[in-house]
Length: 416
Image (cartoon, rainbow, N blue to C red; front, side, top):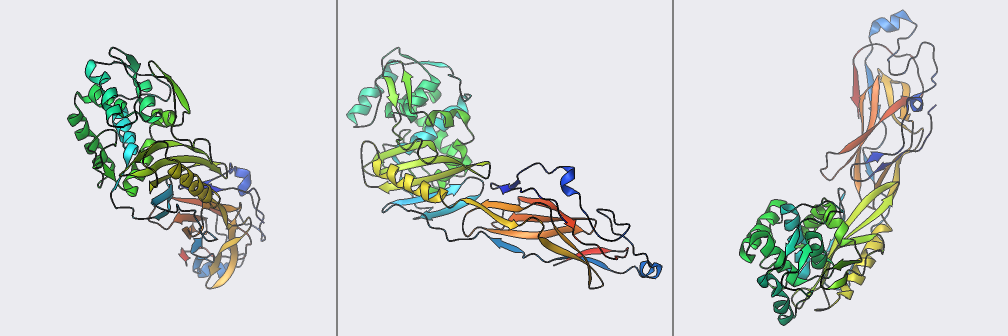
């Protein structure tokens, strides 16, 4: 007889929910002299002397496939991809490796480089930047180029965080140039570092030719942009900034986030983009809770209709895609409480059954596959569940003996 208390394996790393105390593993078995975790010897001395071969035999299926059929709401045009960080790609519509103009999504990499060179905490303001004449003139230059910009003045004092807020919320192209000049002294040297950082992250098909993304020659791929989104999640300062609806800055006053998806379906970032070459674009993040565990959903939408202003087509398409994904991410039971997953055999004769004390579930989505394996021996057996996509991450839960019969001392092996 098994104890009961539901537990859960969640997230890419498949974590068991609940505290599995020692009392959870208490068990009741038939037969005198049985002690948990040990092979017992039959009362008949002739049986003991025979040293029969004892085997642990897996009876549970070696594969578990998350039930259902995956159905994502892809945009009507352009291309898109969506993943759960640490768990893998849910799907994509369009090439993951084809280069595409990315407009102001570029500013995400600009912010990443700035924060690598000048780190901030999630709440710190950082050093103060005093705008030189060359820096302040980037405003008129951006306006002349029909680029988004925030007003600046010579001698203006602005903190690093405020500058990043202007860059990421208001999508100020002139602030991209200001930050590049502040960091490296010239746009050329900053672009060299941008591209070097991108290669260091594994973004091998990305080329930055300007820090704002206005240039048609600044291109990336959906695969590379998902890599960038993953690295954004490791920067609390950047994730806190891109989740802000508004911010107060010295000269421009109150600025507002162009990402109008914030707050819908857990969306909390990352960056919009629109140009004639790129169309309407969005690199997004969202956070949801499944089975008590917080999951990060990342995605990108490129090439939707729209070439200026707020990229409503990409924003609407992203919301629909996130909503459809979140509706299908859930948990599924691999083994229920008390379910037998293995037997102990002595010379082909079943002498005991082994099962899980707590229900074992995984988080995933339709079609995701897991390997199920019984490991150990009759004295310490466990059930392990591992993703079959090449991930080495697995979780194991102890097995309990459901019935006991005469078993002999001797070598124990696992048979599947």
